Picture (cartoon, rainbow, N blue to C red):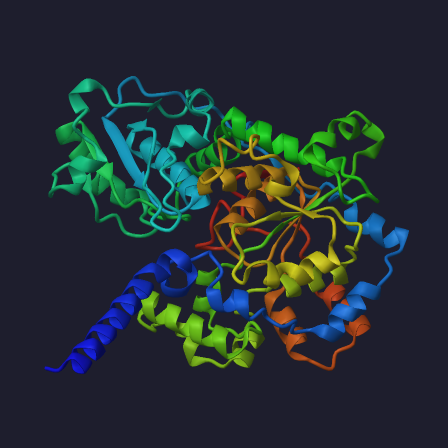
Amino acid sequence: MNNRNQQQLQSQTRRWALGGAFVLLLPNLFPGLLTPLGRAYPSLFSEWNAPRPMHLELMNGALQQQTSGEQESELWSPLPDQEWKRCADSHAKSSLPKESQGYIQVFLDGGLNQQRMGICDAVAVAKILNATLVLPHFEVNPVWQDSSSFTDIFDADHFIDALKNEVSVVKDLPSQYSWSTREYYATGIRATRIKTAPMHAPATWYLENVLPVMQSYGIAAIAPFSHRLAFDNLPSEIQQLRCKVNFEALVFVPHIRMLAETLINRLRHAPSGDRAVGVSNWQERLDDKRRAGKYVVLHLRFDKDMAAHSACDFGGGKAEKLALGKYRQVLWQGRVLNSQFTDEELRIQGRCPLTPEEIGLLLAALGFNNSTRLYLASHKVYGGEARISTLKKLFPYMEDKKSLSSAEERAKVDGKSSLLAAVDYYVGMQSDIFVSASPGNMHNALVGHRTYNNLKTIRPNMVLLGKLFLNKTLEWSDFQQAVKNGHKNRQGQLRLRKEKQSIYTYPIPDCMCQA
């Protein structure tokens, strides 16, 4: 081989090496580009190609609207007393049996609110079996990689004390059962593990399948356990116990409550005319009680998972469609039911999640204006700041955890998704109005809890909104009137639970008594 050929070969080899090194470095330089499991983070495509506003005419109308004092008063007025009231305290107190049948362990996956419902079900199962419940074990979430435990989130002493007359709860197993750990069950088939619990199993299933194991070995571990207890055909005392756990026994640890109260105080005493107020300047405003104001919490669930799984068009053009299509292929091998429908068909059926722009238009049509104090409860939004800019344009006084607190104040919760969600949950429970952009576990949990406390909660009419947003010739006044008419009875009015519906979302009649 002559020198010239050798030089060409060496040059080509160097180019290949450099190209390979660049490919290897891409995930570190641009994690959103080649990491389809990066879930809540905006992709490189969506950041470079900002999604275009999809409803410009409506946006212009919303920005120009004026809200009268009468409209504001009606919008912010609390719910009147309704026909049902809280009664978890009023039912007859049961007493603990003299002797427990054994210990029950449960292993809960999912996020904070799925785990919350699992805890309530675990207490109910322990009551059904006359068992001692070990504080539930939380699995590490594969998406958020949060290893927070029960005691990191909830006040264990309050939990145990609140249930002391109902169910025996212990923080740890006694020494003779110390072998019963998550690692033990992960390394082989174990006689004490129950892994066949069906979804929404009746009480009889636990009596027939779990009780014998517990009686033989003194302990039974149920994994998986999420959504493993039926909502129907259970004794009233078991249903009321689930309500007591959810609405009374589960209290967040003090540092979560303290941070949330700090955010609430700053929201209620936010300046009405000066947007640029630093965290260090809030105290003088907190001291002035006359400044106390109202605020609305918006739970904006618009992550990459939801956007991809919906198969809807969100205005990001071909790049976005390509990115979400590839994401669907990686996560679900393309097996997404919505993919067989067109965007128009999905919107008519109300199956498209509301974008930040669309939820902003909904709020504006209901009467919220550019002086509204809006708290944004969400993780990272798919599309990043570009996606959320239209919402900020409508509501310049929009806040979140970061804008209302310092890094030092958030030190114990930052980077821990369950703790961050707990802060949002607490702020949401104390808000004058709560609205969720799309159904989900946070939506379901807060709707039920706020119903229990008779608090105003707006449930978007997804079918109506889907049809309205498809009409590109609709004028603002017509849109506004249609939205108001379609949401008159979706602002916290009580609804009876139907068969198979969750007791945690619809607490009537199981958790409440007629006044």
